[in-house]
Image 1 (tube, rainbow, N blue to C red):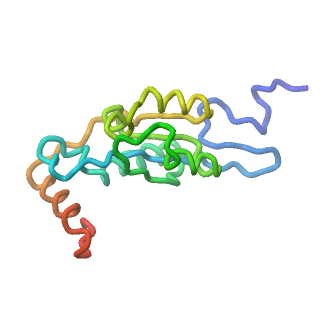
Image 2: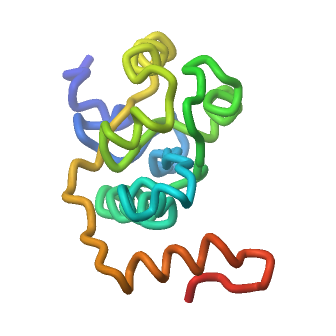
Image 3: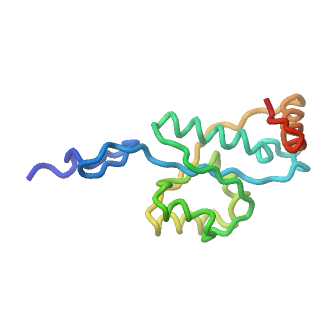
Length: 158
């Protein structure tokens, strides 16, 4: 029998794919977590309000690793055991969670520590992007405000 660390049906450490015996490789499936923060907090903390930029940061992180975003979560103070977090994991559609930063996780989840423990218990990775947040000048804040305050008018932020 060969070395199990180099068996062709096992992923190498850091590999972006999962392999099943006799099946093609599939990219890791990622749930991106963004914080649902009220528009009233735009001036004080624009990145936490700008969920689109949070999800975009996660999408870039995933694409750089060959992963695929299969779920975008937009939550605030969610319990770590809430079904919204785990339904896609249980359905086999999510392999790991990513958020732009711990700060976003602290706003999105009731307890980051309990969520990390639940991830470990279920064998699901949890990552943060860890990049600098974008800077927001008055024009950028105005674009976020327009996008979030006029969704029913058909404005999509572009």
